[in-house]
Image (cartoon, rainbow, N blue to C red; front, side, top):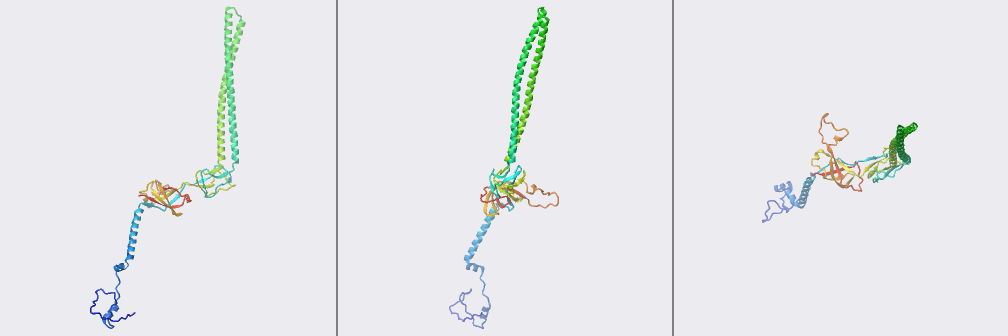
Amino acid sequence: MDIQTKARAPSPDHTPSSDGDDDVKAKAPPGSDHGAASQGEAAPKPSLRDRIRQHWLLASAIAVVLVIALIAGVLYWLDARHYESTDDAFVAARSYSIAPKVSGYVTDIPVTDNQHVAAGDVLAEIDPRDYRIAVAKAQAQADAAAANIANIDAQIASQQAQIEQAKAQVEQAEAQLQFAQQEAARAQDLVQKGAGTVQRQQQTNSDLDAQQANTARAKSALSAAELQIKVLATQRDSARAQLDQANAQLEQAKLNLAYTSVRAAQPGRVVKLSGAKGAYVTAGQSLAMLVPDEVWIVANYKETQLADMRPGQPVEIGIDAYPSRKLRGHVASVQPGSGTAFSLLPAENATGNYVKVVQRVPVKIVVDEWPADLPVGPGLSVVPRTKVR
């Protein structure tokens, strides 16, 4: 576009400035060389300094933002270097199978999937009628064994009386024997003096022999009675052993009856419930799984991250399932060995070509307090940040 301007002669007192003015400049008349040169040249571009001066407010704001970003980056780096983090971390627990110890038909399952139970709560009921009969039978056997012991005790008491009687008979026989000995001695003395008869002497000698035999018989009866006491004592020991066996069977029967109620050993949640009312189950058959309330975190840190890691250090935990929630815990322990060293098939570095690989070491992290409203269980992914410095 051509711009035509009227030529204006400069006034005598006007002196043009060396670096130009912002006023409208006078153009040379058409056809002059000076006018042609002015139209062919482009206006000079403003420098960076001129632009900064022109937009000083925006430039100041940008400078402040850059300084703040630099300070924030330095502070973040200074803070981040005190932490060790890993995304190879999961919630762990010692889950176990719920299984009955006796066989039978399931009569009731009072729990449902994912239900929280307390220690001692009933998880399943098995038909107890057969086990009640077994308890009654074992009780009868125990009562019979106890009655047998009582009978033997009575026999022992009776035998004690017989022993006392035998002792009395022995004493009587000994007294009669002593009298017979005295009679025989007197008869012998009279015969020697000629004052007695031979018949009397023979009679007393016969009485003496009879009393000696009677005394021996009484002593034998006493010995037999005392031996019978030992026999009865042995029988009582055998009966006592039978009673102990019967009591053991009774206790086992009572335990089996108690096992018909399958109970939770500790508080937790019931998962993978497979038992059903009316189903026949055998001893050891899994009815459900129980996840205890006591859970922790296993973080598989690289071995290069363990230089400053010690038990008791604080940990900040983020849960993938609940990204808006942050938990706090502490390092409980560090496994004395890499994870592969305790695997089913550990690495054999002495065979084949060796390639060095950074190993991972499990670190147990305990959460200070699990929120009651978070259903956290084994296998959930977490991201722990352990402050090691």
